[in-house]
Amino acid sequence: FWQPKGRLPETLEELYDPISAITPVSDPKTFESYEYSNDGKLTFTLCANFALPSSTGVRGTPPPIPNPVFLINEFGSQDWTHGQGRSCFERTIDTELYPVRPKEV
Image 1 (cartoon, rainbow, N blue to C red):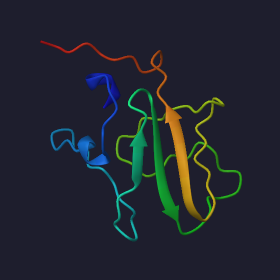
Image 2 (tube, helix red, strand yellow):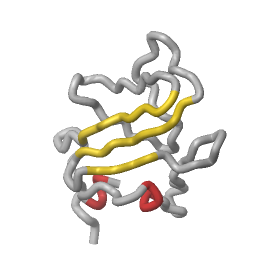
Image 3 (tube, rainbow, N blue to C red):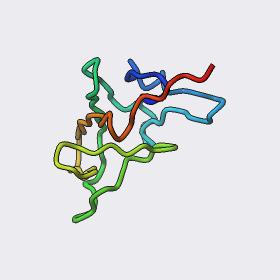
């Protein structure tokens, strides 16, 4: 979303793109939407309620999203580990790694 549009989506529903077969995912058990917010610039937060903690020692495992684009956190890792219950993940887009692509005419 960032690269072709040069902005973060306002909501997860804005990610919906039937041509690219991208559908925002929801909790597989409750079917509730994940929580999403952004700072209006480059940082966004994604929150979910987890029934179980992630496996011990598992790092770099992204949430189950179609066509994932992995973003690196401030520590240089893709740490998606979480405990049981509500967990939030803050990510900031690296504009050098993911530059905005010019629009094709």
